[in-house]
Image (tube, rainbow over all chains, first blue to last red; front, side, top):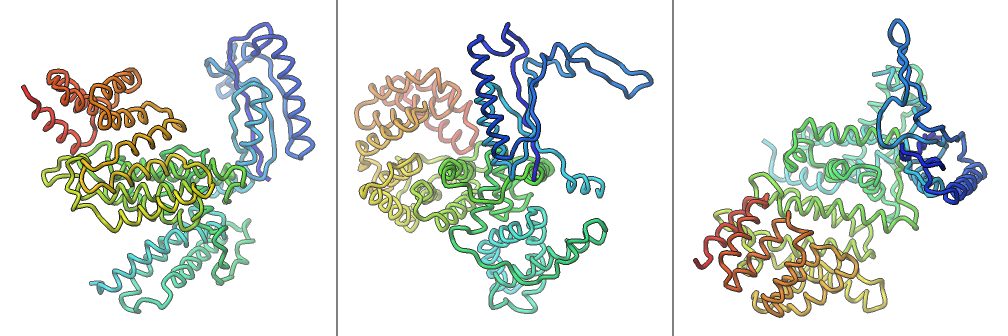
Length: 128
Length: 414
């Protein structure tokens, strides 16, 4: 079955409650996201999910040279950063998009849906 | 030289069978690339063989069998190149795909794939014209004034996304079908409008795009005869296209509805469009769903094409229809069209007041300035009208429209 990465994007600028405007909003988002996760598990879509610490805690590493180059902060300087993600299994993109819409509502963030490579697509890549 | 009857048979088969074969192969093999290439190859074989062998008794069946063989040939070649994919070698089945019922027509699935909301509008248009319309990459690129390589990449990328992201080859669930269908109709109408009122380039009307949009509209109507908006869009396109020949002068100038020679309208298309509109009126009267945007636009065009002369136009009906349009689509453009009806029905002064209220929203839109210029001209405000025509001419992308606006400006009283 196809696997999809659902990345959640939110503002880089944070309040005391992370990306949420108030404590009540944060608690409600946590509760809604928890319920959404339970549903993913129950309906067999869930593979993995977690939230991330703010982008300010990221370290960028380039190990392609002789010695690794470390940079403080995220790779891309943008106004929005990835704040968490789901990995789901779904029969097709329509199902994945419908789940993403529900997840977006639950966690109060915009979601990017992206398919994982498959054995078939990697084989086609090797073949080309 | 190909005998004329073979030529005609090839053209007819191309129009009738292309989408059906691509769609059938796509369902069978789940691969749009394979389906498109095998179908194109089958037509290539037909072009070579039919002049000598004669037109087969069942051209569609012949083409489907040939395309299916081409697809299998290619799968075998690919599987021999890659020993890991031995499974495909077992595909020795030459039986054409089983016929399917009208509801689950393969072409309907293909339409929903090509117009999937996860694809960009440009990609949807290109894919629909290629896979369902059978237009070549060169033809589509020419119609949309983009380089062939750009258009080819657009199609390749879209097909790549459909495959990698597993966009389903299916008619959407009943709960989503209305919304998804709206997206499909938007693609068809965009193709039609780009043909009918080309937004750039040197041609006033790009006939192939209009013809293709109507063909797609007819296909949708065959597949979904009970859907009001599908019927409405087909009627709208027919009633608009019926005026095509009267719409541009020999010198390449746009002729607006009020100045058109109504004798040049295509009465056959108008009769067909009117019949479709009447069918929807009857459905609404029988308690069906309220008409949507395309049905209302079709009804407005039915009122226009019903009038023997421009002076006979029933503007009160048109205004009532725009009032209903404004309820479902309160956009400034709908309000501009409504204001034009108010001008005709009430007075230019009242119309101008309505038009001026839209200045903020439509200042960058040529039709706004054209409508304003016309009303100012009627009010005898020549200097203001001239300035408005200047703005409209600067913003208009279509050469025939620019020629028309320029003449109107130069005809203003000094």
